[in-house]
Amino acid sequence: MDTLKRHLPISRPTGLHELRKIVERFEEKIYSAATSQSDSLRKISLKMLTMETKSFNAATNSLPSNSAGHSKKSPNDKKFLARKKALRSR
Image 1 (spheres, rainbow, N blue to C red):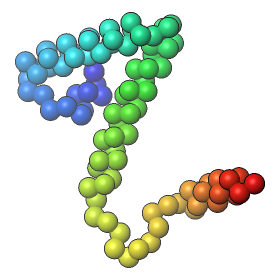
Image 2 (image 1 turned 90 degrees about the horizontal axis):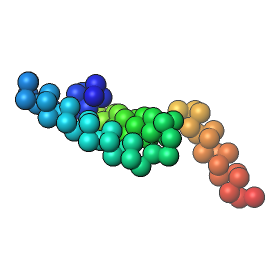
Image 3 (image 1 turned 90 degrees about the vertical axis):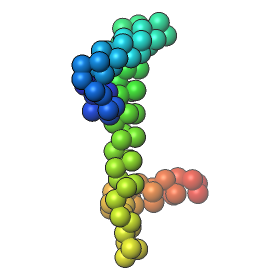
Image 4 (image 1 turned 135 degrees about the vertical axis):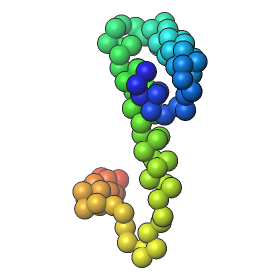
């Protein structure tokens, strides 16, 4: 519920009640599709992570672009891509 509070605009107190109903429906949907408790927790965690990632990406994309043309990739990203390219060429 905390994750949703951060990402959805709510008006108090009716908005909080609606949010609670959304959370309950979401948990019921996940629970009914899950094969075990750990599967249920995994699916909920994945959904929350996806929501956080989308929010982070939206915030990152709203930043001004790098007009100097420098790569935003870290050295580790470049090494990873180089290894990936080398493996493809095998």
